[in-house]
Length: 171
Image (cartoon, rainbow, N blue to C red; front, side, top):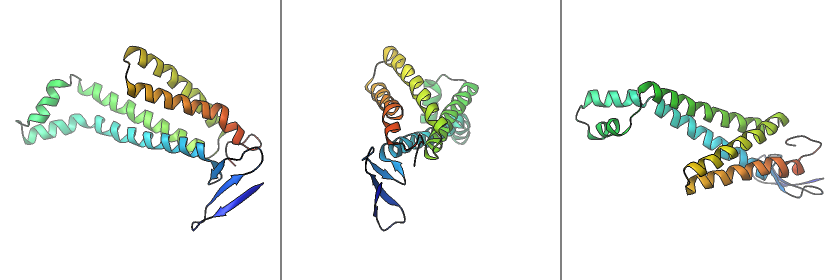
């Protein structure tokens, strides 16, 4: 059922014949690899950004203690009207979203059918939130994010099951 093309590495790229002629890398459909990479990269980025936001009040305070006339830090304080507690809550929330995305990526990689179902629910909710964002504040960035998330939703819901064997998430 499979034909293997070996490369210099130990892993093989597989092309499954029959009901699924798609390319498989590491025994997973190429589309699933793309979804996993996308979510893992964004999740790690959100975790890093969340930590920067979480500790930003500490960074600003330490910069101003070294140089009270620091123009950039004084500009930041003058233009960002958030309390330190709110900044920490925002940072923690962004970290939590990033951890959720990384967990989703790991779950999809390790073939959990429940993770696929959670992913479908997650991207459906993100789609609703994306539509609300576009209505409230239309932008090309929000539109691109919505289209990407809806494409991932469609892939997990309709296309991925065609790549699966015997109801498993990955082979």
